Length: 109
Image 1 (cartoon, rainbow, N blue to C red):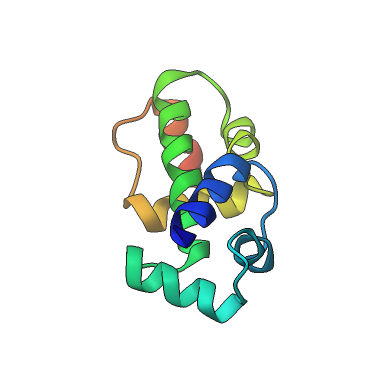
Image 2: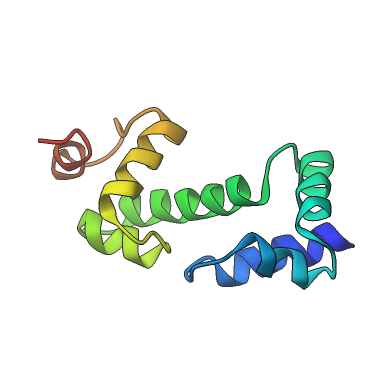
């Protein structure tokens, strides 16, 4: 039940800055318990879960739109396109399925 409250909060608010305290508060637990629940139930931290949600949404946008990287990053809750690109590469291993313009941007060209 607690994990559902916390994951739902993240899924409904991923576009905005979210703190660990806000996630924990949603289930009326402390920060440490929040992290323990995520680790036990999902095998990741709350922050990793948030980033995974954002990356998943970004992949959908990049595959289905012609939005520029900056717009995709902002539309998915990332505060900076540089941070988005770095995290995206770490999490997905690249961007081989995208258009040439997306590939050039994420490759740093």
